[in-house]
Amino acid sequence: MEAGPDLDYARTSDGVTIAYQVLGRGPAVVWLPSLGNLRAQWRVPVLRAAYEHLARSMTLVLYDGRGMGSSDRRIDPNELGLDAHLRDLDAVVTAAGLETTALLGYYHSAATAIAFAAEHPRRVTRMVLFGGAARMRDAMSPVQTQALLSLVDQDWDLFADTAAHAWLGWTAGESGRLVAEGFRSAAAPGVAKAWFAAAAGIDVTDRLPEVAAPTLVLHRQGERQIPVEVSRRLAETLPHGRLVELAGSSPTLFMADARGDLELVTRFLTGGDVVPPAVPATPPADGVTARELDVLRLLAAGESNAGIARSLGITVHTVERHTANLYRKIGARGRADATAYALRRGIA
Image 1 (spheres, helix red, strand yellow):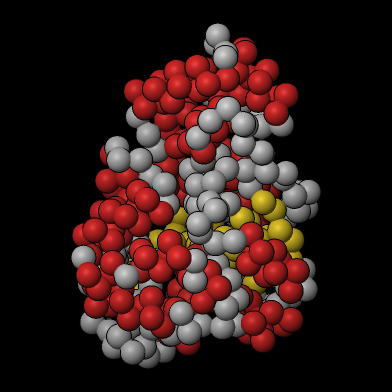
Image 2: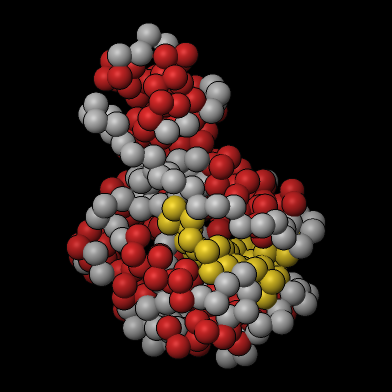
């Protein structure tokens, strides 16, 4: 099942065909798309593992937005605003036969999830939002993000590689190559340019008070990406919002701490209580890099080198290199010393 389950197709009210997949059993959750290609995403081990994990407890619905992946690419580039995204989501929810569902809004699609939950308070049970904002310009304004978006028009291949590696933090190994290919094959450059331009104008701030669903706002970003204040403001404005700051700086879910992220999201979306906000670990003052910190956290949790490699989407050789550098920097003779160091620093 390298490309995931078979694709089904929904038809929007304005005649656009949307490709979607359904897997698993239990309460439904729709994972809204950002820029991507479902078939390509299934080839990334970390993403495939996340889909399969969520599907063990829930009915997981995935789809490609209009102009993306396996959905209809013959679209009007002027029809890529919020209303169009809402039509896509409504078509998928209806075609999948979901009377109620939770929503997972990721980056660009967070605003769509908010608007849909405000319009359909009885249909949306819970929400998890990551990397987005009610006013999308707030999430897209950091200098690094603007520099990345400037590449869409200049060099599409360079944009895809930079988005995967420099912005999201995937390594240059096989997983990083596959993520970049997912961006590259997601849409035609002209559609992607129009898509980002439309996103910059989306603002659902006035709909926040109408959201009845309990909402978990998750934040894990580097210094040059989305500021935590954006996520905090979103959580505080939602009537039933709660912010959890995740340790680490890789601006994605299910990679730096795959097990922790999946357990948190699954527990919340299946009706569990919102856990107290995690306290982000303070990076040690020993020259330890953010990626070495990710390795240390997984190592202290008892993961093998192979398990760390799977969680971070890197090779075992790269894990061994990070571990050797880490031991040298913190003066550890082995895993036991490193684990004790992590516990003392509040990293584990």
